[in-house]
Each structure stands twice: as structure tokens, then as C-alpha cells.
Image 1 (cartoon, rainbow, N blue to C red):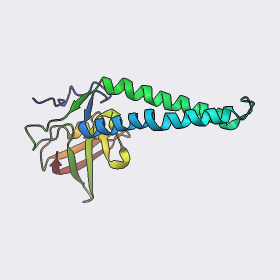
Image 2 (image 1 turned 135 degrees about the horizontal axis):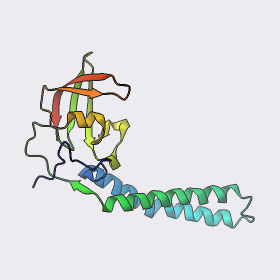
Image 3 (image 1 turned 45 degrees about the horizontal axis):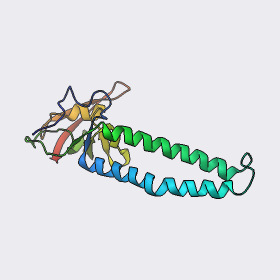
Image 4 (image 1 turned 90 degrees about the horizontal axis):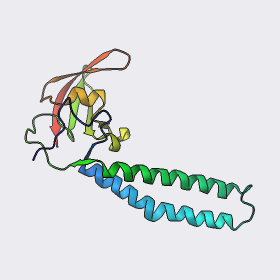
Length: 169
């Protein structure tokens, strides 16, 4: 069964509906860590700070309460989004084309190479060159094959051309 987002219909507008298996595992682990480790640590710290007396002027207590609210917000966010996603586990039949989950190697007009992986909006990690399927770069890449030119429109109106050198799933 292919459950691959099509070029023009993928992931609604945000890319949040699809996630790679790696991304699902990573976010599930993060949710577990928040529930089992971080939140209990914060609750203990709040109890300790509350025992020190006046809470209205207790900086540690105020800070920890804020930290607990932020952690709870992150837990709610992950729980809400992880239940509404579709995990894409299978590799596409056409591995010579760029689809969701592909890792691609590109070369720009100056000969510099860069690798990107197309992932769901919930699992984007720019520091790892994991880009959202809804991003301009990913939209330009979807459906391309090796040696295709990929033209990406930048927000300032300029266009950058890359050559697709490698596709890995």
C-alpha cells in the first residue's frame, strides 16, 4: 500500500498530517520523557520551593510553576498532534522519484552540495537539514528524478537552481 502524499495534495497546508517513522519514534520518546522524567522533576522542585515559605516572593517557586505550565503545554501539543498524524512507514514503489521521506543530495550553480530530508511539519529539524514537506524547497523537489533541475523561489523573489544528484529512502 502506498500512502505517499501527492505533489499537490500533501499534508493539508502545514505538513502536520504526515510523519516519518523515525520522527514518530523521536516525538513519542520526547513525550514519554516529558511525562516520566521532566514533569515529575519539576513537581518535586515546586514542592521543595513551596516548603520554603512565602510563595509570592519565592523566585524558585514562581520559575518552577512557569516551567511546569510550559512543560504541560508541550505535552498537550504532542498528545494532540501525535494522535492525528499518519505515519508513513513504507518506501515508495518508485524510488527514483522524490517523495515524502526522501533524503536528497543537491548541487547549486556554484558547485556546492547540500543534503535535505523531506519530513512532516511536526518533525522538522533545520539543524539536521530536515525540511517540511510544505516548504518551498520540498514542494520544488517532490516528483523530481535524478539529474533534474530543481528551481526554488525564495521569499525575496529570486530563484535558485539546484541539480538533483541523489535520492535515498
